[in-house]
Image 1 (cartoon, rainbow, N blue to C red):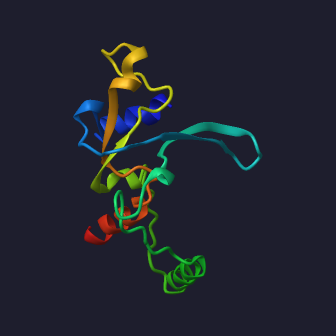
Image 2 (tube, rainbow, N blue to C red):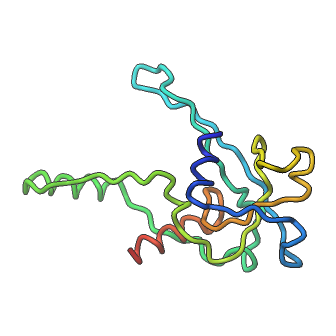
Length: 157
């Protein structure tokens, strides 16, 4: 959890702001932790992973987001392209995006509650959640529009 939040903070995925400074009528959404155990082929655990997600179920269409569509690849197509590349002796490369969705900018303002377990420096712990919220600068996993924003960023690139 510490590693995950440190990466988000380092890459400026959100800004801490006072709840009273939010636009009138704006609502906050909850944050959710997703935990996974990564295993190696023999079944032993190689690492524990924590991912911070936004609770997209709290978003309303037409208010918090408009577009959610992003095309996905059919694995049969991937296998076909790799087969053609092998037959014609073409080079292939793999790209792995670490924290892919948070690289895309948001098109609307999204305010999120401070995640459980996260402590803001310089603020008494007992007052943090009542006074402060996170203003998201980038998409987070779980947002309804996250995949559409990621696709839009990829097509522009």
